[in-house]
Image (tube, rainbow, N blue to C red; front, side, top):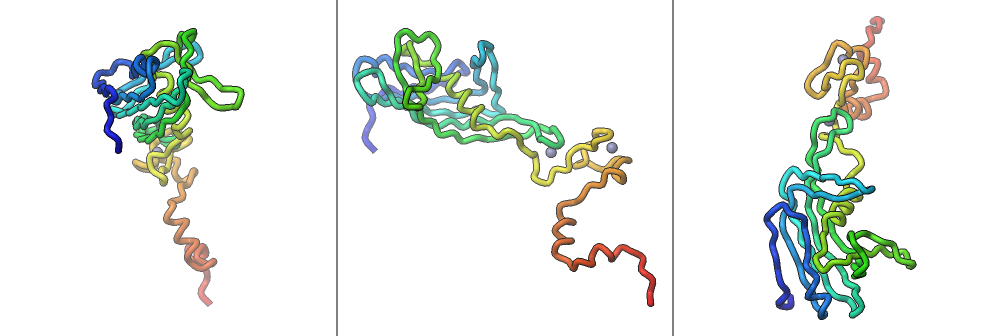
Length: 207
Ligand SMILES: [Zn+2]
Ligand SMILES: [Zn+2]
């Protein structure tokens, strides 16, 4: 690994994750920033949102010049843990993500807010106008795109009773007889046994 003389900043506060690219804008080179985030404030559709993480989310971002005309390559890693709801029983589920970051960066002094833009070749560029690049929107968007649409707290989650809302993982309710819950291991047993296993419970007359 080549020795690095690039400035290396670590942010431990919860301020916006930023990387200062002023030295890269003056001369070729690379720079990096790392830190931890407990939340991310970002803008989407003209509104401010906050993405909360259940534990400090480590990030590391590196930027390399790839030409003399304001083009850079941003790479790195971000490991946020989101709190989502189990799709069946709604209890909170921690969802750890391990995100590889990689995008082209383009400096355009006319840009006010850094944003992703698609080039004519269909490639995404993160366009920025200030040497101090706020990574909040980029990290938030990457997280949202990579997050699963739905999660289960357990693959065998029994969900909620559709009549009274009882959490069937914690016990049955009076509706259990009408809304039978099929245990996953019962399904396996029936498959493994003979096709007549289902008849076992019937009271057949003895000959
Ligand atoms: Zn569940
Ligand atoms: Zn019920």
